[in-house]
Image (tube, rainbow, N blue to C red; front, side, top):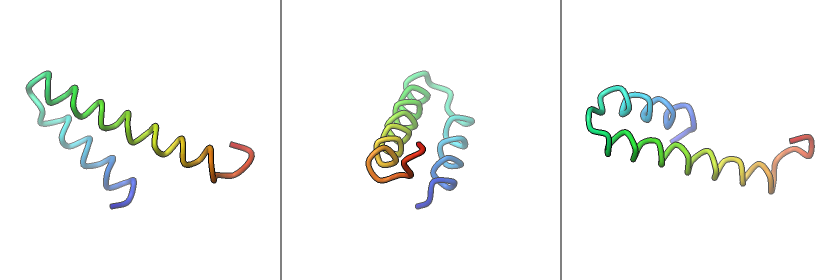
Length: 49
């Protein structure tokens, strides 16, 4: 699954979430994804990043 589809899936899940626990779970997943992408860029991304 590419990043744009992951972002859209997360956005849809947040839009329909009514329970605080569900929203918090989506936020943690988004955080983990952003951290993984950042780590990957730090290791093998362009030097200017």
